[in-house]
Length: 318
Image 1 (tube, rainbow, N blue to C red):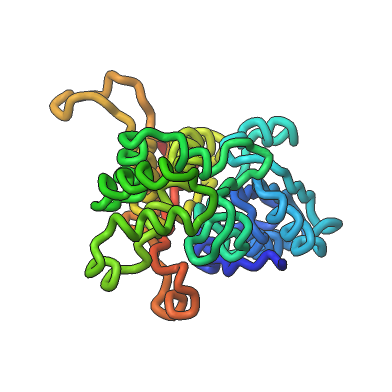
Image 2 (cartoon, rainbow, N blue to C red):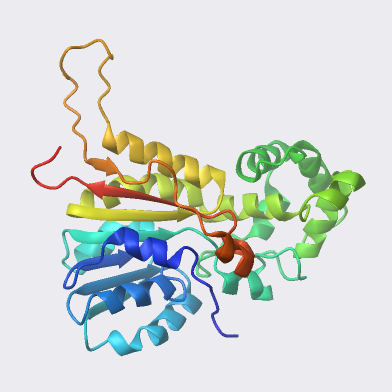
């Protein structure tokens, strides 16, 4: 199966990075290389590009897609998770970079490739691992978490108001026999949600599948741990551009960008700052950049996307 993924907010993201010829840029979620290709193009035959992804299929697809830049640029494609960002940079002997981008969406390829177990629309083993070298799968979560753990996970990461009932039904059904496939799980979710709600909203399983995926791949933890590291790695004037796809991620990005812009913890009535925490840069996007109506029509997965951008202070600022 070909690695297909339509890059969301493509032009907006590339524009936000203000790519300069000869600069050093990193894509922490390389995917099929859609965003990466446009950055490499703008480097005009000079500079360095680093692409990081934990998915072997993505690495293969992006390597092929960026083939034409192999001899024109210093090009590194690394199988890793972006939470290893600092380690990857150190190994490549890079200390500062001019721009970093993250696209936190699950690729269309991963969703459409049935045997990965990300989608509730096709029967497949309960997998959902972004990195298939890890041992724990969605099946382990569904069959071993307590009812309370499942409830918290679905409520917090899926933001589903039927979380309590879904957790109860999962536990009840797995007592009869362990859950093996995506459809086993969908059956439990269907049973937990009132028929009239099922008829009106989107797919009833969407939020629970999202919650399990986030939990399994530790997506929010990875994001929280990485933003500060990435901002610290930016050269003066360098930018970090992050595309999120649900409110939990967007909230983390928004909050952390604000904190790095204004980290001072002194009480508001202090005449001068004594905490010594210095602003690292500024938030470029007071409001997130959203996809156009046209993009949402052409790619339904773009609908919930939001782009936020942070810029490191120039040397004479801050």
